[in-house]
Length: 341
Ligand SMILES: [Mn+2]
Image 1 (cartoon, rainbow, N blue to C red):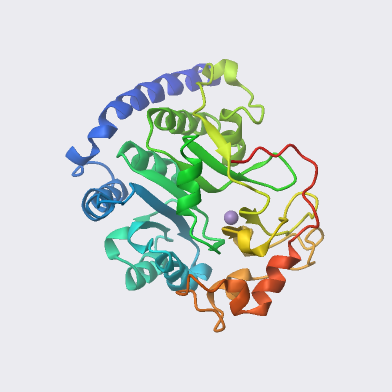
Image 2 (cartoon, rainbow, N blue to C red):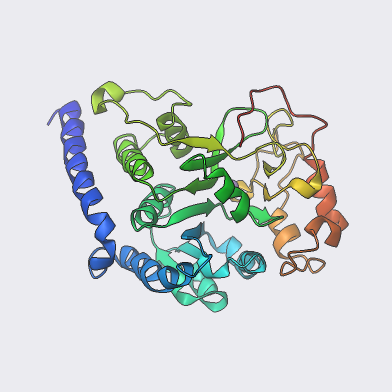
């Protein structure tokens, strides 16, 4: 078959699958005995523990979700989860552990320090996992706050995220000095427009496996140009979306560029610090520090920090934490149009 025809054929099949999927996914709780082991494990976590727990009066149907892999980082997971628990979110935090086939470092580490049901094992180490998992969560009626593992909470992110979500179904972080989205901190509301968006994104990535998923995500929101759409049809309407304040609240460290990365304002206003670990390596020619700096050690293996203490800011607990945060602080925000809630 000619490649263009084959792609079109694959697309039509996927569209059919996806539309059938969108009909059945809301009935997920009825079909948890089917599907892959991972799909069933997510269904069990959502259907039993999380549905009961998050349905309490005053609770919110919000799942915090992170995705982790690689043996190097498993050692930091207990401390990472301790920080979630400090803000009362341990019981809503789903950890997707992508282990190597022969080594179960992650899922074992997770189950030792977390509720076993909330540690879900996957096998394929691909970024697309994030969107498939979020699609399952959203289609099962839960909002989801995805957090990269290379973040640290300075304050509880849930109240400001829920406040911002009053005006948008999708919230995403961004570089301080560019319009480049960063899907390392991402909130998706359980909403039909979001479910359709995720479905479209998954289909788009299937048809364009060579594209960087963050660019595809931004492209479907209309922020970046996507190519070859004439072959795959028009893109659908994006959900209402907004940027999480990249200036002083949902901020990132400076690794490569003080013109683009970093933050400005007051230490007290930082909610999430995304320290851009990038799989534990840097290009030493371009990194501002000239070398890789392991900030997992600073935040998650630091005897001076009591991560369970949510009231004393981490930068007051250890001057080195303060130095790190201030090292990425700019005197003023660069002049890009800031669109933040
Ligand atoms: Mn990250």
